[in-house]
Image (tube, rainbow, N blue to C red; front, side, top):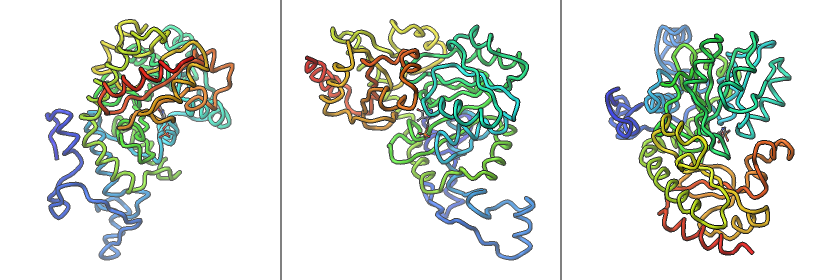
Length: 393
Ligand SMILES: *Cc1c(COP(=O)(O)O)cnc(C)c1O
């Protein structure tokens, strides 16, 4: 296993796996077993009361899932990570120990559509009130806080407008109010940003995106201190939204190349954003790596790379539809963070479940196109977008 001093690309390959503990297997094996048998009753009793370390049942603990959790914790520089069956299960799981009936969650407004849905359709039914700040600015969040606020929740960069939330400022507010700061860091990932180092209590990931990177699993994760993750793991075991060992094994493999892939997403993202920004038919490009982005200075302070996700505005919905339909290398679809490039209109994918009026208020115009730049050669992606833009009537 890797040491704490190793750099991220080394930890990505070695953390969570000790060949000597697995018959010398060079890479982590898949423990596809629901249950684990004990040699005798005394051992089983020891496993149950915790005096013997081992495995009993895969909803409680599984060696493959544990290896993936250790690898992720190492990538994030965190004490601990807990994997979930999806990113949404991770959002719910992170909040479960922090919110009870009567508590209040204050969130920045530009959130993943599924998260907004959870905040408006699920949490209020459990007696938790949710307040969305007017913007992601610290003063707007501060003005929403009340004595009932136990959680400040934010997402950075945001989807699909790639706004950057000042994590140090949010952490300061949370500390002052005795609240916890929970950050959805899916769009950044540990190569590009480290919210825990900036004061976040928990970081949530949809591991379906950059961490796995190959678009072949749905998974989620929460990382943070041992103390906080222990509480949410207990609730996870009780409610059951664990990750099965099969996707955990794919995630382990995906994370081995995460730093390599992310570096290519960063390079491709910068090249494609620069091309779009210079194109006469593109009204505006939302990418934090561009000097024209409203949060560029903050992004430079808080991030070490800007990723592969961006959006851009065309004159209207017809132009957007034309570009989406005329690209050849970009698959039309939701999701992001995979090796393959994707293109979509956020209004009918990621923010489909957000009412139209609220969508427009969020700045999601009909001419908005979102792209997830994969790890293909950026010059090919640029040539493809160029011919698609030329097709706008
Ligand atoms: C995809 C996504 C989620 C939800 O993750 P799933 O794995 O699809 O459940 C949450 N937050 C962000 C920012 C996402 O992009």
